[in-house]
Length: 71
Image (tube, rainbow, N blue to C red):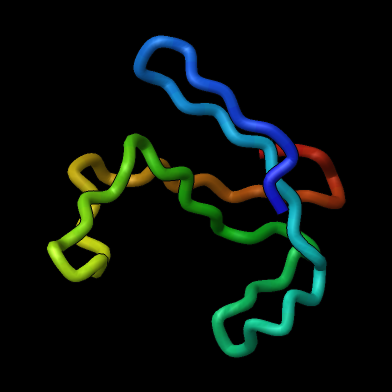
């Protein structure tokens, strides 16, 4: 669920949430412990039929530890 979004210059910021159990198995990942996350930089290109293309800029990879509130 998107809670808010804003655009400042060429930067889009979005605040969102999702259920811990989002029933998207096998695509869902655990939020317990430390998990690898990818933070997208910029928007993905889309093909003429709406298919997603590769990122122009490689996403930033971080290990996020939600229960410890640290990246």
